[in-house]
Length: 447
Image 1 (tube, rainbow, N blue to C red):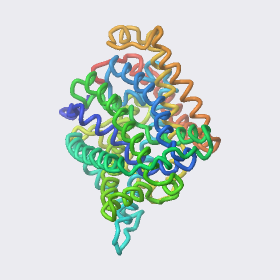
Image 2 (image 1 turned 135 degrees about the horizontal axis):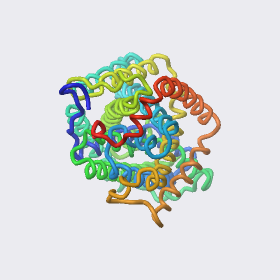
Image 3 (image 1 turned 60 degrees about the horizontal axis):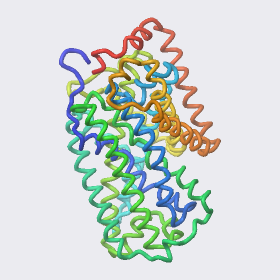
Image 4 (image 1 turned 180 degrees about the horizontal axis):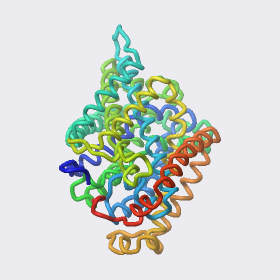
């Protein structure tokens, strides 16, 4: 578990796990990509959100089954794929997911400053790059001093964000206009499907509760509920808020606004509505940022324990945090903020998540053969007729992956190629030791 008294600490209950996993994505989902999707789906953006929830529910089922087999840190991203599917494919899954968390860390840091600058009446605008770096450092310090502190901050931000969005939805319902609601999709069903493919970004990360397996109290119960609630709560908020937004104002006005939710809120809450929704956006964005640093560090930590990557990233500080993994995660995010390469990373984030989802479903189908004892003792099994769920998940995820377009796929291939170099150099430099660590799983050091 670590050296001496240094070990991961079981501090997370159901609320903490739900707040971290759901908090990762709600900021990006509501306040960044909904308006973009509306350009394709129009008033039917809420249907795109509903369609986008389907592959997430399917991968959630697969992740819950794997977690019930054996809760472990970095489980969904790295450990389950390496132990059940293939060492190389599993390593690339962890490598992909690490970048898929670092990119949003940088994006949310800058997005927070942009929303601060959007405050009405603010005369002096903050420098977005400098402000983004400061935000990253502040939340690095919060993460450094322990998962308990992360949990407290995350719970406050998450509950405030959920409450604020519920107020936005409830107060907006009396102002719905049937004419706006029934406007046809500008591009027909293909536009709704395109919207769904874009909104996968809004759901990406909702199964990452399984990467916190060793820091959860009663992990089989806590992680399973965290995944379930982490999917249900954002899906309801996404669908309902999109329905209200394109029902209060015409979808064209919503899609063309730089701050679409603030534009909608101003229609029925006046000038106060703009400030109100901006403050809710702050909570949502910071909730995402905090959780992304937390889980990103755990993914690198979990990927490093087999010594393919330098073992220094598998060390734990005196607060029970994978400190070096957290340092590198924050440092790369700061590099992206300063260098201005965030857009390139953003284009491959969804592709990285979809690759991980495909590997997760394959792991569920292979588990009875490659891990028969763990599978036998799991209280939930997706075999027999229930295998249709992971099979459907693979088909849908592959279709959505292809739909991301050649640019995102090429960038993804480049990142995976870089990961392949690290894998082959690290693996073949100490092949016997790595094989021993992987083949002896499960073991006490993973629980």
